[in-house]
Length: 214
Length: 228
Image 1 (tube, rainbow over the protein chains, first blue to last red):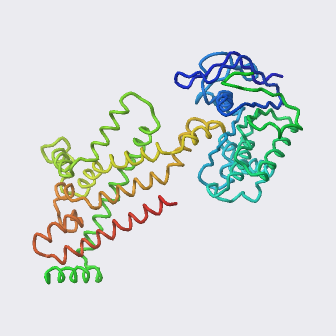
Image 2: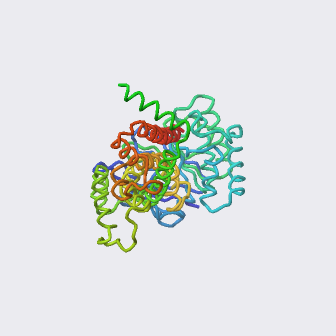
Image 3: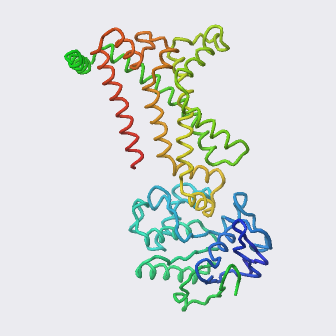
């Protein structure tokens, strides 16, 4: 089943055309690797797919339905979650951060905490659960943000450079988690400029240059 | 010089033995300051939040107006409020002039721009990623706004404390609208003005020490909140 369908999608920052996608499709359970140099449009494309940026034109559908962008697109944002390259952790501890998504969906605190704890285990963050989010290292922050994205219960995860600026140990951990997620059947769109880590995964490669698929 | 030293000694003695007149003026100051801060926060915090988050026509003008009103001389606020509250004024029927409530009204006018501008700055300085993170985690519009507010809470609390410090040290409004009635509308600042003019320098010093202590504790709290 096709989840994402993008056709002739364009996005401008002021006057600069930074995204000009002819056609990109993503199927359910698929792992799509977005590759390309810095500034090739990977982050912009992911933000458009997440419904956070409104494209200037073209067709962009999720499961056959046109995406509603920005604040009104709550339904889409609950199906598709973006993990930013430099994720922001809210003030408070790790559990509070990870349980944000379930709470946003109306779960009560104990249900939300249960969901959060499950995601925390999947991302090997058990030791961090009551730690102050502001005091975590870069790698820990990324894993917590991944746990938070997972706990949000989305069908599709968009991961923007999940292993950039991480040490070897944290990179390995994140790659391991991504592989487990891929095996679980969740749809993943992952941007990276170091695609080697995904060599053992069955992935579809989409290479971007200057905002276009090449 | 001896006159000054005697004044300081007398002032400190009055503070140490908790002089009833000093404590009464301190109590009135804290009471009117507290209510003025609460009311100003109820108005100023939402205004600051809306100005920081909203994009509407006239926003720039509203911000300029608020920033300008930060510099309003307190005697002008006192004068205007006096006009409204005096018997011949539009609010004269309420018979509030020379009551603590009148001082509170004047202080609210003084503190609202301060709370609004400080809270606007604190909300506007919240990391742009907060909003986007909340959106992508499936937050509704209301929850997104609440999340931004939560991230800005320390700055907003600091705005409230700054307002309390400002209204506690104000003299023009308290004098014009309160009338400096002992035990009723006499605040620390109006008492200092009165006692100094009567030559009671020591009494003035005692009142000043208590006032400084109140503002010092408020600033300590504010600093603690901002650092945390």
